Image (tube, rainbow, N blue to C red; front, side, top):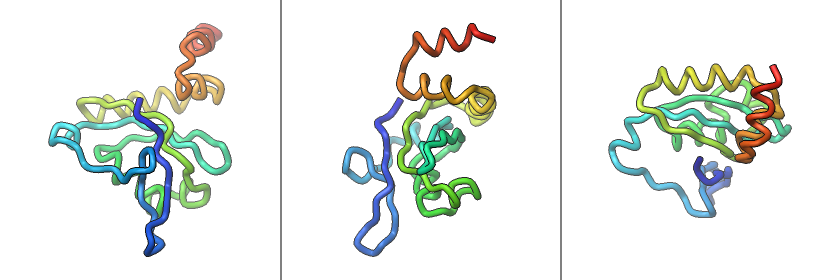
Length: 124
C-alpha cells in the first residue's frame, strides 16, 4: 500500500497528483514497467477500483477528468490503496475480484483491517 495521494492545483490551475504535500517523482525503470491495481476515494465517498501501468499518470488523468466518465462526474479526493503486479493481467484479475466485493470489505482492505477482511471473506 502506498501513502494516499491527493489532487491539488498548480499556480496555472492545472491539477497534479501529490503525495504527502510533495509532487511525485518517477521511480526506477522497473517501477514504470509494472502494473498497478488501485482504489480511489471519490468525492461522493465511493471507492473506485482500477488498473494501470503508470499509476502517477492515471491518477493525474482521474484528477483532471480525462480518465473515465465515473471520475469526471465524481472526482477523486485521494488514491487510498494500491498493489503492484508484474503483469497487467494479474492487476486486472485483482480489480475484477475487488469490484465484486461489498463496500465494507473494500473499506477493510483500504484501512488494513485484516480481521474484518477475513470475517467478511468467510461470510459468503
